[in-house]
View 1: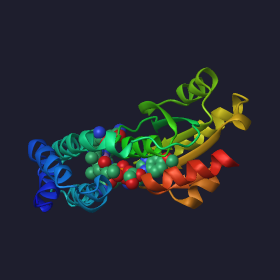
View 2: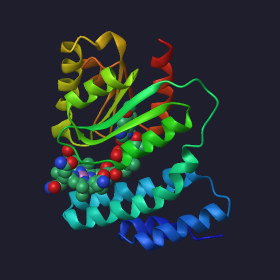
View 3: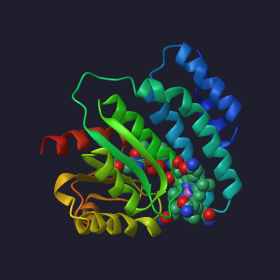
View 4: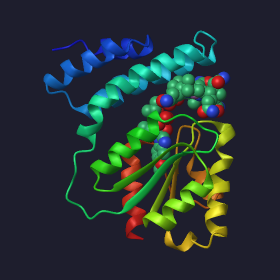
Amino acid sequence: MPDLKQLHEAILNGDAKTAKATTEQALAAGIEPLKLVQEYMMPAMDEVGRRFECNEYFVPELLLAARAMKAALELLRPLLAAKGNEPVSRVALGTVKGDLHDIGKNLVGAMLEGGGFEVIDLGVNVSPEKFIAAVKEKNVNIIAMSALLTTTMPAMKTTIDAVQLAGIRQQVKILVGGAPITQKFAEEIGADGFSESAAGAVAAARKVAKA
Ligand code: B1M
């Protein structure tokens, strides 16, 4: 049985090689992928954020931690995304304009795929125009936006306003999420749903898909 604290420590120390190796060992030992994410990997990223706030870590450490997290997630993503049997709705997923954080967004994408949704990942720094093009050209029924910065939260409202202006608001449901986003904010900007977690995003997408 691998020492899972090593996974937490490897992410904290930006050690992608150990993060990957420990994840491989954990999977071989039959440990649930979601348990690794929720109990070891996400708390490590939270600690990275805390250290950044206290000026113990700086951007290079953030980048190394993100690289280690991604190395481990790469192994987990296909397992999290193992398809269910449900009818497929098409989701355009992206981190909003001005925001480059994509780890949470990628997790949301993997969980949505696992929940039977087809996901078109538009990436990071996604402009309102790009979301709109996905709805028009790729028959998207749900837009899911992620934001990690308080300074990029307004880009969610800008996107919703642009969707409205483009005359396609009725044909698409809009979900929002990310660490600084709240239910109240989601309501204020006119989103159809909110989730504070990747697992919750699946429930939110199911709810709006039925509405
Ligand atoms: Co940045 N960063 N960062 N960063 N970074 C935060 C967000 C910060 C809170 C750190 C801190 O100060 N404690 C802070 C924001 C402060 C604020 O706005 N109030 C911050 C800052 C300030 C910055 C820069 C401005 C730093 C600088 O340059 N001076 C800069 C901005 C760059 C930009 O985007 N334009 C920056 C840069 C970076 C890196 C590039 C170095 C790197 C990102 C690498 C990458 O993503 N590829 C990075 C990182 C790693 C972080 C922290 C440490 C970790 C983020 C993360 O991946 N968490 C972060 C601190 C923290 O969050 N504790 C921080 C793990 C991930 C699984 O969780 O993304 O929250 P999360 O996703 C969750 C939920 O939020 C939810 O589900 C996910 C899983 O449960 N969710 C959704 C997310 N999206 C959803 C969408 C949905 C539903 C749910 O749709 C329906």
